[in-house]
Amino acid sequence: MTADQDKAEALTYALKQFVNVCDEAEALVGHKPLCATEVDYEELVQSMLPQTIDPQSVQGTGLKQLQHLVEGCKKCRLSETRTHTVFGEGVIPARLMVIGEGPGAEEDASGRAFVGKAGKYLDSWLGAISMSRETNVYIANIVKCRPPENRNPEGDEVAACLPYLKRQIQLVKPQIILLVGAVACHALLQTPDGVGKLRGRFFRYEGIPVVATYHPAGVLRNEELKRPVWEDLKKVAAYLATPLNGRS
Image 1 (tube, one colour):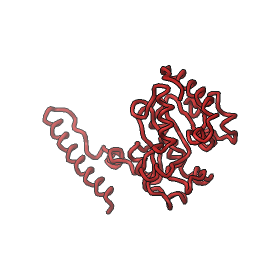
Image 2 (tube, helix red, strand yellow):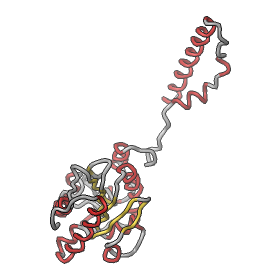
Image 3 (cartoon, one colour):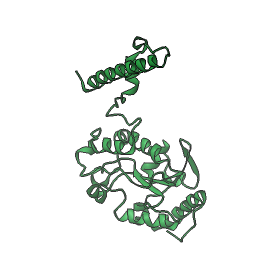
């Protein structure tokens, strides 16, 4: 007999005893007793027992459950070379959710999102529009494990990880999403267009406004991208009605 069957049997017995006690009480006060044979105990017990959750499904999971699934995930080859999974971090619910492509070396070593040089630069972007991961921002990536040598994640790797991110978005409940880099844009917006074509306007993901911009690492390599990023950040700030604190 399984643990669930044991629980069901014990609960059925307890319910029958409860109904018998109720019958005796009803008889004492002169009301028609509830006949125990009239109760569908099987249906009642099943409605009271906790529902079995598919350990491979993200549907109905809370954030801790989802993180546990990610930590044990072996759905793609990235699990073979990771040091840590990088689930994401920040405030829930978030005013802004920032989504990048995947963890780098420092993120893989620490298990935290955007903590390397590009992450510190991202923090300065957020500060420039009065936002931070400590107060009103949640940060995550398309894939939760580091691709070797920081290569772009491949299509099957993105497909394996995307359900985790989509459930994460549902739980974080951001007012607006900022996609940084082409990989994040392609995965969430389902478009082959580059960031240059996508930035400067609003998109929607399941009703949530989305702004696309360049990845902080790319801007560190090419300072000419700083101006368009600042314009994109100002769009986010205007939508959220947060004050500007200067150039990023």
